[in-house]
Picture (cartoon, rainbow, N blue to C red):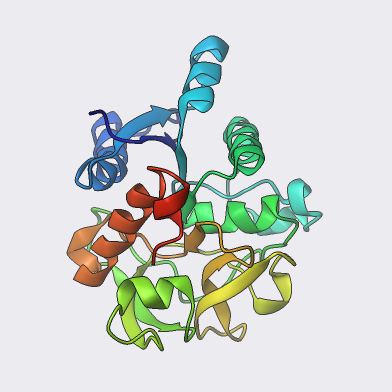
Length: 250
C-alpha cells in the first residue's frame, strides 16, 4: 500500500547557487519522510500550476521546510529586518497552508516553516536576533544551543515519551529571525524556548486545537547535529498523515 502523500515545500534554485548542495538539502527532508513510510512530494514555486494543484489536492500532510526570510509585508513588519525574501515561495506556502487548514491536515514546520506557521496564523516575527546563525550547512560545525521543552506539550510527549514533562535538548541553529512569546499567534502555544540577547525565543510551537501542527526552529532533518529523539518527530508526523485516528497520537 502506498504511504501518505506528504507535500514538502522547497525553494527554486537561486542564481549562482550550487544545485548539488540544494538537491542534498532537499533530499534530507524527503528522506526523513520516506524513512517512516511516507511518500514525499517536493513542490517548488516554479512547478506548473496544474501540477501544483494536483499535488495539493492529493496531499495528506504538509511539511514547510527551511529557507530564506518571509516577506515582512505578510506580518506588517519593518522591511529592514529581512535579509532575503522569496515572494513566490511565500505565495506557494500560503496556498499550501490554506489547503491544509481547510482539510485539517497535519503540518510540520522546520526553521522557516515554524515562522511561516506563526505568520500564516496571524503572528509576527522578530527581524533579527544575534547569536543564532552559525556557519551554513556544510560549511562547518553547526552552532547549537539548549531547547527547553514546555511540560505536557505534544513535542515533549514525542521527544520524551517516558517523561512527558519534557526536559532540555541541544539543537542546531541556522536562523537570524525568530518568534518571541509576544509575537505568537493567538491559536498557537509555546512548545519550547531558548535564550537570546532579545530574551526568550519560541523555538517550538503547536496548535491549541489538538490537530497535529508542530513547528521547530531547529533543523532535525540534519541528523549529524540533532539528538536522536527527533527521529520520533518525523515518525509521529508521518503517522498523523495516515488519517484522523493516528493524528491524535501521541
